[in-house]
Amino acid sequence: MKISQTDDEAELIIGNQRHRFRGQWITGTPWERFGLYNAYVVVHADGTVAEVTAHSGELVPGATEDLIDYIKEQWSNLDQPTAPLTLEIDPTNACLSRDCGTRCFSAAYRRLNPKAQIDGPVIADLLTAFAREGGKIVRFDGGGDPLLHRDVRNGALLGKAKQLGLKSALLTSGELLASSDLPALADSDCYLRVSINACTDSTRKAFHGNDCSAKSVFDAVERFAGLLANKGTCVPVGASFLLDTLNFREMLDCAKICRTIGIRHFSVRRVLGPQSLRPNFTETQLREVENLLEEVSSLNAPSFRVFVPWRPVDEPDLAPRSGSIPAAQCWQSTFKTIIEPFASDQTFRAQLCGRYRGCGMGQALQLPALFQKESPVTWVHRWRDSFDVYPHSRGELVRFCPSCIDRGFILMIEGLLNAVGKKSADFSLLHLKRSCQPR
Ligand code: SF4
Image 1 (cartoon, helix red, strand yellow):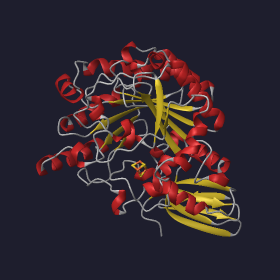
Image 2 (cartoon, protein in one colour):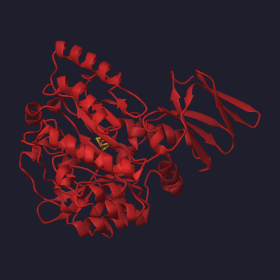
Image 3 (cartoon, helix red, strand yellow):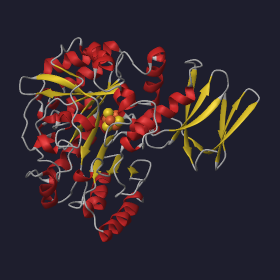
Image 4 (cartoon, protein in one colour):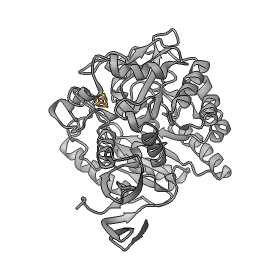
């Protein structure tokens, strides 16, 4: 197999067969490729090829290699795997932010000021079982802010994930970065992504609902990025900016500051989910948003990758019930799971996806947890059983949920598995940046 390319065409030669694709091959390490490709080319051992829509952000902090390994390991039971590929763990429900302008998916239980957390040793056991059973990627997420958990703040749990061979990410609003053990976090090789939703204290306060200064967050991020630079690691620091009527006028200034403090990925996000959680931009504001997004995009450079929404900011919510997710099953809740604290007794429960954190409290549909109060040593077995005992099958969910924030991943896996087919697990993937829709 040989690849080559011209300015607008990527060529793949297998034996005496030539395959041409509109676009450019993307090569390099996972972090070098990150965000640059938008399609996979599936190459089967029998020489057949297929092009599939893909997005590297769907796997972060994992990579294509993790996905290939996982598919091959789970080949005979992909619709009911023995372990999830990705675990999103919410170490604590506590958060210093109030509810992020009411846009937080957990806004309803945020207002209850939940403080439940999972004990550090329990999380260590959860990670050990996850790695042992074949899991590959862990995201410390929320729910709350993971840095409110002492064993995240001191780097112990991120270090444990690294020791177990897991790729990890830490998502935080950044208030406690300054008082975290930054060298220990840097040593863990975790991908840090900070919610940078404002660059002035007044907007930050309006959005996050606390008095943490924007500068203190920027300063801590800069220190962390400096530690990574000194280590010579390839893991970047990322920032996300959630578009809201409260903060959109600061997105360009935020991007410019992020560029100077060592952040290498800047991602502007639309608020997804039901209309009740979405910001109501006026027509004038929407035009302003579009102009600002263009300016933010123009900052894109190899050392500062910028991602802006390609869908309209006011595009309506995705509604699986109305058939907007053409897939055989919900691959999100098949390949991933959420573990969050349960009540205040420091146990945990598992949810289908981020949409159902807090069992979907405050949203149009509440669903029960996949399981709760399980041993941290055997939880993966219980997760596996959930395919048989949960009231809704993973297949039913893509025609049942009233809103979904994970369509991209579901469709990417649907397309990939269809392209791989059931011939054999002997396939490889190439990364393509398409310049147009597949022919
Ligand atoms: S909301 Fe989407 S990702 Fe979550 S269970 Fe429903 S279909 Fe799956």
